Amino acid sequence: MVLDVSFMKETFGTLWTGVPVTLSLTFLSLVLAAPAAFYAAVLRLHGARWGAGAVRWYVSFVRGTPIILQILLLYSLLPSVLNALVQAAGLPINIFEAVDPFWYAVVVFTLNTIALLSEVFRSALLAIPSGQREAGLSIGLTEVQTYVHIIIPQALTVALPAICNITVNLVKGTSLAFLMTVKDVMAVGKVAAAYGYNYVEAYLDVFVLYLILCTVIQIGYSLLEHRFGRFRQQAA
Image (cartoon, rainbow, N blue to C red):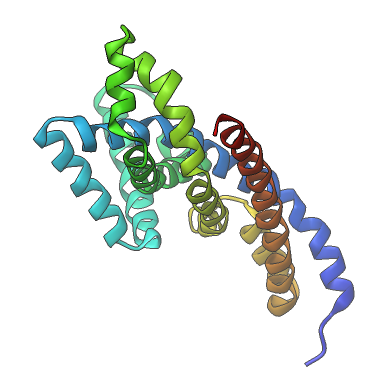
């Protein structure tokens, strides 16, 4: 088999048009998931039994089901539910046309990331001695102030490697967003390949582009770890 090199060069440039969508989907999912995931981790550690149980069930559910199945189910159900609610309210809006599929993808990946990040945050919080929380409260800090000024900075340093892993997996996982007609890198590659059935060339281009994106992200997190690690060494 002979690869169409000229097609690969042209397609590789075209694939970059899907990078903003892929990165936006990754960034929004992480930013929206982080507060809920942290609250879930705290609830798991210090919350009521029913709250901790609910979080445990949610994490187990997300971990135990394939993300592609979560995408297909939510993309099938959510628009229909929203449309029924809009019609019941008497609003002249067609949800199927009004809402960009990108936002359905954000919802899916955010819900998935909440479960994964909550476990990362929980393990990071467990790595911080409980005496630090008690010390913060004993000097007059509120619960929120204790977490913001004492616990979170230390827990974030511990959690960075795992957060990097989740971010990289999220970037790769967003390649499934094409199932919801989102025009990310994978969708752009599939469309380009369909004209001349150059799927091998297109997928090689996609492979290389994802490798570049994930490598850049890992380098960025490595720099953050180095910076936080330097502060820890100074403190020691």
